[in-house]
Length: 192
Image (tube, rainbow, N blue to C red; front, top):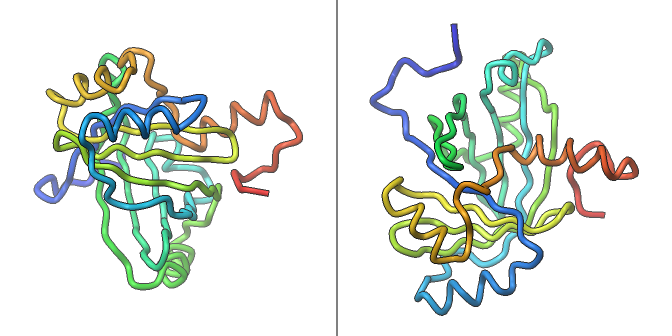
């Protein structure tokens, strides 16, 4: 028994590469050189990852999240990930919600509580039918490429990345690893 949504007609597939970078500046310059369009300037994101008391979603490799960026709120469910040559592929359901606090209250009433909170500043670019997110986080900078499989690998290479070297972890998993090396870091991934 998994966490897969049986209504497959409404399931979208997320296909992404995630890379850690020393700085977003050269990536931004490469995007501009390649003719990318800035879609959303750097905006603070606030994210709540939820699970039940038993950690059932995480045990199944699933994710339930409420995200706020600016005045927008998004409720997201992600199914278990499969990896192929660094590319992470998973089912993803998302819906905009009018009030993130109410969405969190509804999920809490259903038995899902926040287990991890994280912040990041994200700017989003568009290039070759793909979204390129530049994320500045409390543990460093990251680039996420999301789009269709055939062109995503070529885009990664054009941006100077090795697809097979893509990071596999979610921000929660990356933060947990970071905290092992930085025990002074807080439980949640927040800017000071």
